[in-house]
Length: 126
Image (tube, rainbow, N blue to C red; front, side, top):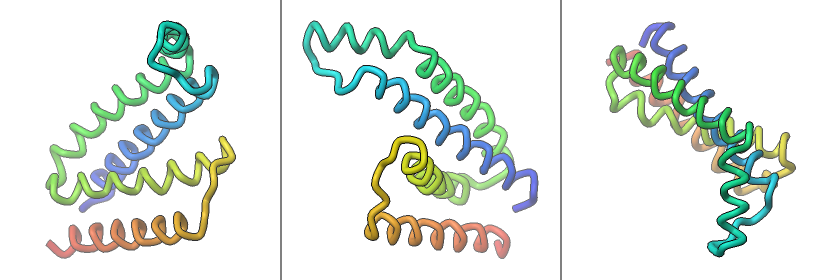
């Protein structure tokens, strides 16, 4: 895998993680949303928020970047590398929202990092 391909994959991962965090920020603005008339009003509020718009824009851009990546890299290599987004999102959620990073979650993050590194190495040797 060359530097351009890796950069596209990492950009796609970053945009996808940013989208998740922006959507979470929008949802945090209204709290838990119930499936009721009042909850639908809260959902409407979230859907028209700037956070939601920014998150959806990141998703749209990530799709374009991902298409560029898939035109250069086997999907069997590229798609599993999206799991790096779990790492980025978990750490950013801890930093931005105060979400817990328990020892078990940190161990899982470590396993994901090892898996992504092994996958990237397999792409170089193929």
